[in-house]
Amino acid sequence: MSRSASPVGTAADSDFLLGMAAASRERDAAARARLSDAQLRTQLLCVDAARPLHVDVGFGVIAELKKLSPAEGKLDDGLDSPAEQASAYIEGGAAALSVLTEPERFAGSLDDLQAVVAVAGATPVMRKDFLVSRYQVREARLAGASGVLLIAAMLDADQLEAMLAATLELDMFALVEVFDEADLERCLPVLARAGDAVTDGRCRYLLGVNCRDLRTLQVDFSHFTRMAPLLPADIPLVAESGLTEPAQAAELAALGYRIALVGTALMRSGEPASAIAAIRKSGGAASCT
Image 1 (cartoon, rainbow, N blue to C red):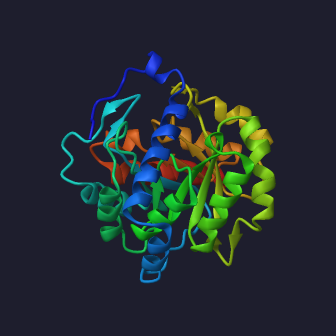
Image 2: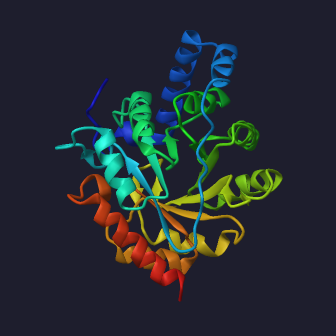
């Protein structure tokens, strides 16, 4: 497993997302060779039910665990274990935990996911990866995930619809991520056909805007403002990447975002529980105005 990251802006990162998609397809094929889809489905019959995601009044945090970032470098110095960090996130009141499982550029694994699930209790855990198949959604559920990230820029409408359906069939939630208007136009009809985003208090899917362009890895926090007028009011909105201080949560809440996905800032915080609480307080105050 490689733990080194190529510098941002090099030829290797000229289209980061294309490389991640190709690597994910290779991992998907290798996983199927070890465990067929039929075998995986059989094993899923013995797995505990997925933990529901509830989007409460106020402002929530999806707290992310990642050891390495291609843009930021190594993030887990001084961290004893993913479970230790997860426990701090839960103490801070995270609505859900996100665990990177991509091995080469983020040094993640399904083992990390399972370690976090083991200590998460009722808090749902999401697999964050560059998923390209329904098999990988089922693989996530087998490892204990209650949710998955689906990146619209990597998937055509048919692929997105099939993977979202596989997610919902397993009573998992999906965070459907868009970057630009083209992504949004492609995914909104898919989400409309999937039914309500929230039923009986349980969130089935969320719509996320990433202010990091995954083609170049550049971050632009003002991207949240530009995208906000285009976003639907009936789907919980998630602001992904770019949040570095609690005050920014108030800006996001004023734009209509109900949740922030925060990774690097929490991994680098000496007190992640307090950091999450501060983000929730800042965003929650703005949500009530």
